[in-house]
Image 1 (cartoon, each protein chain N blue to C red):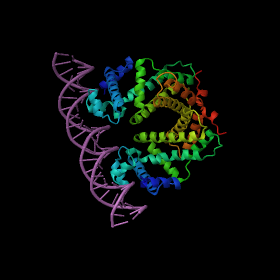
Image 2: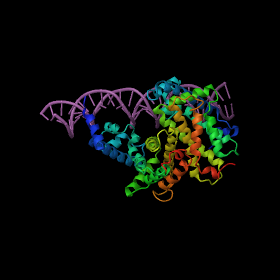
Image 3: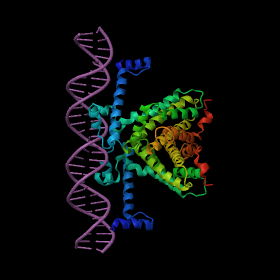
Image 4: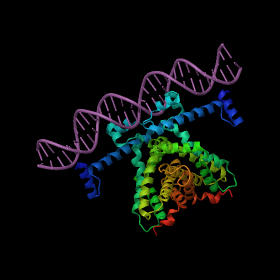
Amino acid sequence: MCHRGDRLRTLTLVTGRPTLTQRRRDATRLEIARTAATLFAEQGAEATTAEEIALAAGISLRTFYRYFSVKEDAVAPLLAAGGQRWVDLLAESAADLPLREALERSAVASLTPADDAAVEAMHWTRSLLRDPKLDGTWQRVHAGSEERLRGVLVDRCPAGTDPLEIRLAAAAATAAIRVALEQWASSDAPATGPGSPQDLGARCMRELTAGLGLWERAGGE
Amino acid sequence: MCHRGDRLRTLTLVTGRPTLTQRRRDATRLEIARTAATLFAEQGAEATTAEEIALAAGISLRTFYRYFSVKEDAVAPLLAAGGQRWVDLLAESAADLPLREALERSAVASLTPADDAAVEAMHWTRSLLRDPKLDGTWQRVHAGSEERLRGVLVDRCPAGTDPLEIRLAAAAATAAIRVALEQWASSDAPATGPGSPQDLGARCMRELTAGLGLWERAGGE
DNA sequence: GCCCATGTGGCACGACGTGCCAATAAGTCT
DNA sequence: AGACTTATTGGCACGTCGTGCCACATGGGC
């Protein structure tokens, strides 16, 4: 009745950190993701076989499919990192900041590359976004972001807020990020300055969230 | 130098109608789609093989893949019909009607079932929408709608309108329809009345398009 | 009748993703 | 330390997917 897994899960609750093995899993996940991103950028996702990725990452094909259930999803951790950062920033943002403001600020912040590595990551993202085979993965990543965003919004809004309004707000904000990144990826604009993701993101976010009814009822004032 | 295909294409331009063979193709396409929808609704897309659909539709597996490049896309014509109707209605709508109004009216109209067959079609749509395997197809259908919508919007806006604004308007409107239909599909609400697609659609459309800058500049006053 | 374009079926093939089992690595307990 | 349990890995086989290729049928224009 008392399995080892339970104890580990308890440990996680106590220390507030994932297990060692769990962190190892995430590390290899990331390593596979980087390997896959390189190959996808070089020759396209279509021409890259799952076995190729697996061998390049130093694992067997079977193990690869234990980390990712679909070949294209191998780059999902990379594509999802930005969105993850976004909702994390929002969740940590000051509670007295108007929600709409907080939403836009965290979005812009997450779209602003902090260092050279982040700039490079954005250029990887661009080439991945241009690959039609990775469209499905890209959509799935956004669906995930939207869902997590909804969770955060629920926490910041008074209980009993119309779920549809929250859903619409999450959809609008996610669409803003999506359009901004797709627009940037299809252009030749640099990673910073006019035409950059944070520039487009701010404009898109402002327009798409301007008419939402959620702000009136749940300002967070 | 003068192939038969050229003549047929010319014919199409003259009569304004698709070729006979083209219409036949579309007819079988629809028949396959209906067959697939039935099977998917019965046993789920996962458990349905492409060969099964093909045989049930009276064609070979090889021919099936000449009509649809992906198994799940076999139901795309059904899922796309509503969106198609939507942008068609918008394109035909009175040019002096304010654009935002026209957008909402055509959306609601396309979401309102005209007869019993349409009601039944909506219930099919619901069960298809609940199948996680069909998510990708659903997204692709919406991407297609969004693109056609952009085309119509470009026509109705003065030349030189900021493409980003048009893109945002198309994204917002498409998101409204998507959210409305997904919300309805995940509920038990009937096809008409409160909680129905046209009810939700109107609310979603109003909120999501309220803050767009496109209307100020291109009212169609 | 012939001709040519298009649509169809059959077959083989590489790739995908999964179930299963045996071998190994990692972590726990005494 | 050693015995024991649990998680992770690799290998193999299997069904399905989607495509390239070729041979055959249909159907309309000459």
